[in-house]
Length: 334
Image (cartoon, rainbow, N blue to C red; front, side):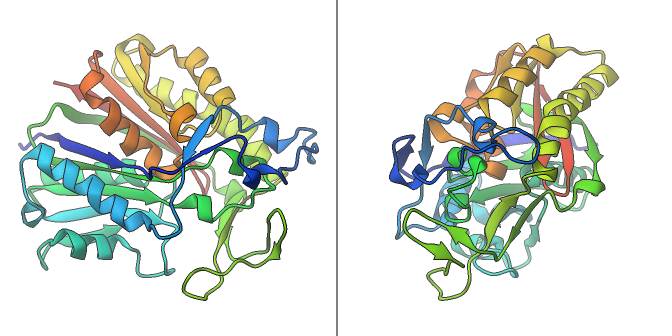
């Protein structure tokens, strides 16, 4: 039976840096919400964020990340049978820009393009589906890539916006590789479906308010974390649901935090510290202070950045996501 692994990784982030003194944060609302807590106090710890320039698009960074992963794997784009992932927020509701990445990489026409709209676990699900496809004999090599341009799609009055950054990451799955998928685990909380959404809605800036318009002249969507349900999810499912899930995944295999290097969602220093205390990983691989919250690209970027430094026998990648869900992967280091 084929035992595929991650044979190459790559990441790309914009050069432009935004720190806490940037005027964009001047209208940040610090008033307590319905839950009695100020949203701005929940999302802290991002000293710097990487931000797309006015003439930059996330698809270019996705292509760069893919090319790095392909080069590391020692293969060409024409060797890839399937590409999984997502560009968020895409130019169009459909199709996703993953098709543009396919074209710009010069991939074969018969390579399957699989957009996965599962923010923020897109990369994790891409690894799962790619692994299963290779094991089943459906393909030999898969490419997984995500790109996030969310700095253009948040309301900077809201607390969650102060951590957001842009970036892209990718990985190649094929025979061999130093990271092998062992298992995965997930929990879905559909009652919180509307707690975090991306839709066309009014936005407020320092000297402007209204529905934002993109460069194409069409209304641009804006992310919203509901001040009641969203904060509740943050304080319950995100805070303790993630370590509970990871703990169950590790217990299946007789492992503990001491056996793993951990990559998680990185929206807040408070969450990272809490998860570190709950799980006690041997190493915590994160870039919150330098890259901010890269939403669904957090996972491949940190994997690519830290892959060569892993000294534990296992790696755990744990994502939270809209909908609402929590998903975790267990990877073995070979």
